[in-house]
Image 1: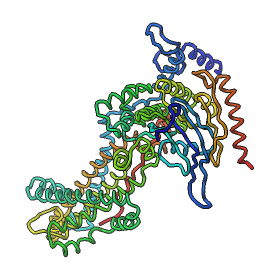
Image 2: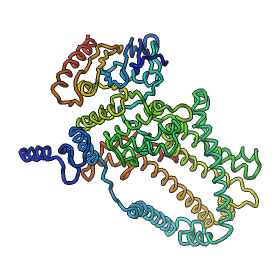
Image 3: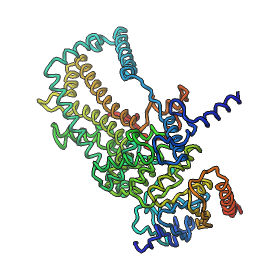
Image 4: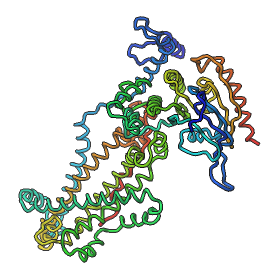
Length: 361
Length: 253
């Protein structure tokens, strides 16, 4: 056995060039036909380097995209089906009369009927507009505050902990003040949404800047980046994972704040999903309540999916994701017999993207 | 700053660097004198705590000496780190492009220069790969190309091959030597590997530890290209190692 291995090794060292160009052994010296001026020693070194590179490059796992989409879709469908089943079982159990708790068989058709009405889309459009505008203002405000606080130590000491305290404050608490300040109108709702979302965005920026690896800052400075160019080329992209986490969390808070605002601040003549929900409750219309809730849930799922796509793309680009998360893969141990530890080594920070939902309205 | 003689690329003159103050004071470097000729390959060798990396930071302008002066005569200094420290959100080519962007090189010129530099480190056509898709040795070559994109006259290398396996390191020695010969760049190469220093250096500066001082300077009068397993290299390496051990032993008492 040992003799076999030795023979193979020594042969490849003498013969050099393998059939597939991936040989490790140094090949024979220069080819006189090409007229390459390099010395034989240099050529040998080059060929070995090329061979090593070919061996080192990762083999792409060519998994079809359709398969990947199905593999993340079917568990969601199954979970939805299970949820509907449980709901139906509770209704069948007779725990509440069906006019108080209607089953999916009564609710879902009403939901799809609603999708065909102008009133529904009117309310839907207004709610999404409010959410979009409020969120946009919160992102700009939170981003600027976050950058300034991250930049100046004194400000950090002064207001850093207040930002976190604001973030944990239930946004419904702002509603009474908003009504007193602005009366029952759009500004009051905007106020609640912005104050609900901005602290999360600011915190995402602050932590992102805090966790920029010092080595990357040194690299940037050694390349001559100073001040703004250092922020533009190193700090901002390095902070991006955490900023994205802050944006995602900010959206969750904006959406919660908006619902709190819409339930209480009902502006006459301005239908919205929250107002529909409140009206349905006033009329003891449980089907109406559930339809509004389904709408709110569906929007939440859709926006979350957008953030997940962004997050996934970012992690793919930075090598923080190949098959499942790195942590999961490490826990499972090497699979397919291909050790990858040489190719790992992400230098960027891993954003805490999952812990978005930490406090309730 | 420009008073350097033409046969000096870098003058380190009586440089000390002290960190902290009072009782917790640490003398990282103490009275370092070193003149480096243009195009010279100087290896800085020493055990832990000899201030090798501190010295490089001073030369690269990332830090200032407490006492003394570092004069590069206005020459541009590039830096390469042990960890390739590539920006993970950019491709290999994107990383090489950053120093060009920072110097506001026009876009068309940039693309051509990036291709040229990647070709120089034998990575032509690999520019679209991301750092995590490259092996350690390939990442270090991208890092080398990026250092050259700074159009540096002096290249500071901080244990650049320390984390690589022996075969890759050996091949990268050949590559570095070739590029050094082709470009005529002045190299300041920090290492704790004595053979590596003998393999690559024109001179080896042995630093003592705590505080970092120049303990001895060895001239490596050996023909190039050298091989790391060559008899002469081993011979000089054992002399240097003996001297290094002597320095380290002083701290055992």
